[in-house]
Image (tube, rainbow, N blue to C red; front, side, top):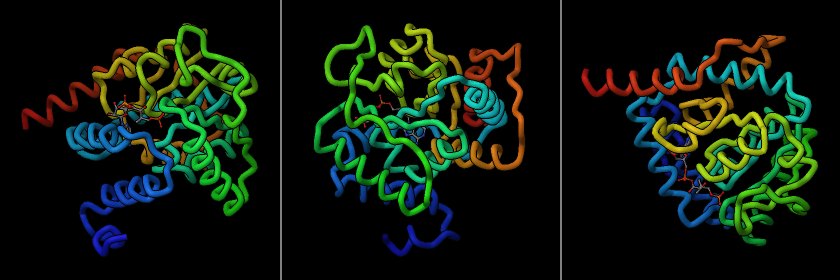
Length: 248
Ligand code: PTJ
């Protein structure tokens, strides 16, 4: 790691650390070719949000957690960026929730799957997490999607009722909603089709959301879902925040 990225007092520490994690993951063959572009788009939106968890995102985070803790078959879907940026935090969350994770990547190759599985299994062993890691042997398909990105596991994504899919693409989000699932997404871009399609959209940065979720699970139980929850209002609150930032 560069000297700057290793210094937590540096104002850009968090951002540099995330970039460093992606660089390392790229060397291990974990990432899609467009992973860094996707990250850059996320960074641009995070800048507009003030690189912080805005109040509406925290409301969405709590609602998502309440749905995950009351689900029959919760699952967390993982792509290359999520494993690279927050492999430990996401396994910690799955360990808390006692649910499986499933590696389900858009640009699927055997080499990437192996690199991602190795990385996650290493963290699991090191941290002593008891989490089932699915994805290596898909035996089902997400209806309405073409090609390798439709592949999934029956015991994971296919049979889940509530699914957390950080950094999802719009098509797949739509297909999962069409399967009748409650789809929880994390996306810094409130304009994305994913953000608009999902049941719950958390407009916040991935690692902040996972840290918040783990802290909430450590300190508050049980969580209650809000009955009059509106995803549209939550997304509007993110637009309002960005608008106020740009006007200031
Ligand atoms: O590993 P794969 O093959 O499944 O591919 C993963 C990527 C992310 C490359 C792929 O799904 C992709 O191209 O995604 P998109 O369509 O670019 O969407 C990524 C979305 O995530 C964008 O709307 C970004 O704003 C957002 N984003 C990027 N980094 C973060 C983020 N949101 C929250 N936290 C981040 N760290």
